[in-house]
Picture 1 (cartoon, rainbow, N blue to C red):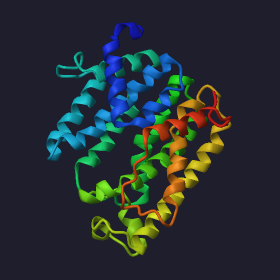
Picture 2: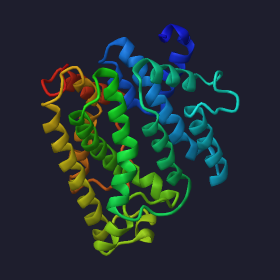
Picture 3: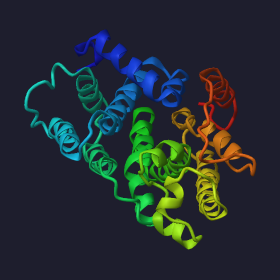
Length: 287
């Protein structure tokens, strides 16, 4: 079995999907060999499809049904359409080619059921569990494309995902607040004298800012740990962790006192490419 069994059209579909909806991960694959790149894009395209379910439905039940389709597909119990779905076709090929485990992919789907509802993220422990099974799992699966699995790489993937996931929670705050969805842990907000309605107002307050600053601090600590661990893994796998380079840049910006976390920040694709290119040339990420 090889990628010859799936068409160039399915690969192109996945690449376009990731380029459109997750440019950082798409651009990071440009610095890896072609076979690895195609495999990574299939995993990232799958992630995009799961994330987009929240945008495509207005009620939780249709979203649950869509997520169940992907769960059934992974378990080999698809009810039609699997062969005609380019992302499913590419992902199944990658799973077979690189012997990827199904369980973390299924858990990723399960965790994103949370996205369909308006329940607040209750605590830091809940957020860390959510991110571990989503962003960290993606790093771990991606790493298996480049190197055999190991406890050291999984440990690195966990911290890398926590850094990236917490940063994404902060970056998405303006959009999430506008639709009254809370990923910043409610317990953390309450510890600083803030709450849901204060966040949903979309206006920065000292209390909400203090909670966000603590989350930024936790993300920076996970990033420091990940970068330290990166130096001790195989050079072949380091380019898989290139998405950490924009995380470092974003956290530096978010930490500035003059940056309002409730104002959307847009980074140009050219700047993202420049950040990733510079990182790829460094000893830190160089393969």
